[in-house]
Image 1 (tube, rainbow, N blue to C red):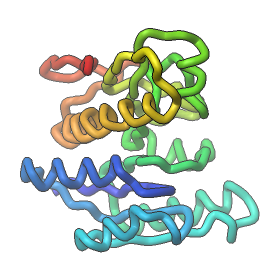
Image 2 (image 1 turned 180 degrees about the vertical axis):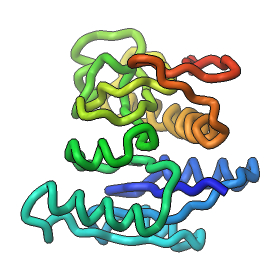
Image 3 (image 1 turned 180 degrees about the horizontal axis):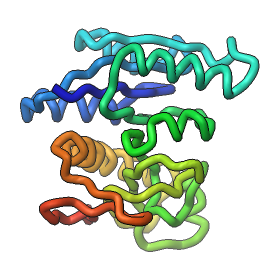
Image 4 (image 1 turned 90 degrees about the vertical axis):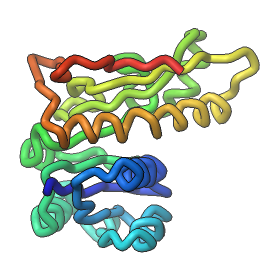
Length: 209
């Protein structure tokens, strides 16, 4: 049975969406553990409530990013994982970590990549005056938010939107597409060709909400 390790920094709402979808649809999967980079992350409480092993590795206790990532890598390898899911993990990972988990490390980003990589995506989308915004699930590569895109969801930018209202709409979309992308991976349906992901058999990789 395939196993997943999830990395979080906060409430882990996408992690919660994945777990609840897996339970509802009875996926044959093991949630081997959840790791946060600080012990106050609320998502650890949800994990414990579901009987999922929960751990904190305090990044502030490590002098360098490399030291923290080495500890994180060792814990993930100890738990065993076919897939590492970043669910609001607010750390830039080192190249060595990314290479170690290449092809089985995925992230969700609150924008329609390649637009608005990095931080403050909702504010930037509003400033740019775009008509659509959204979220993207992608494989993680060494370039920040540059990895092959697995699937996306677009939402309209409405008159009167501010960053908070737009963020709430995008988060709801994230909760739809992240479980879908994870299930595709677990089912062996994803093929990376160049910097693109193909789903076999084909299925829409963009949903409009």
